Amino acid sequence: MAKFLMKSKSVPKSFPTWFCGYEEGKTFTAPDKSAAQRWLNDKCLQAGTVVDEFFNHYGPRAEEIK
Image 1 (tube, rainbow, N blue to C red):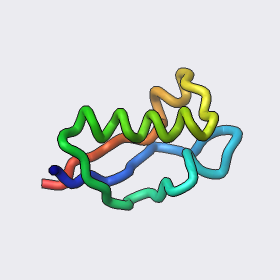
Image 2: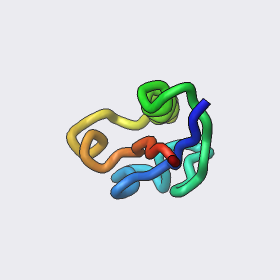
Image 3: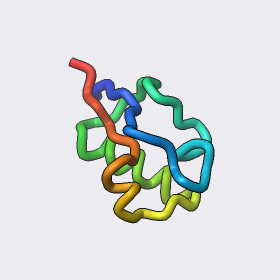
Image 4: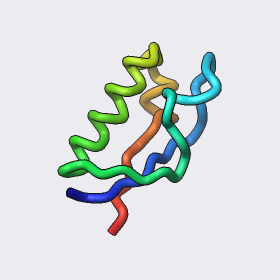
């Protein structure tokens, strides 16, 4: 398992955070970067985040800690 940081360029336009439990700089583990990003995207979708241009540009990203 690899370690990742939760990162984003901004917060959602209509919510104070991306999803309950999202915290900029918080670490989490996943098998690989692809799985980590899918997990973040799934959490956002479950929270009702609209996947649009804003999300694609500013949304949360999984940054691997090396």
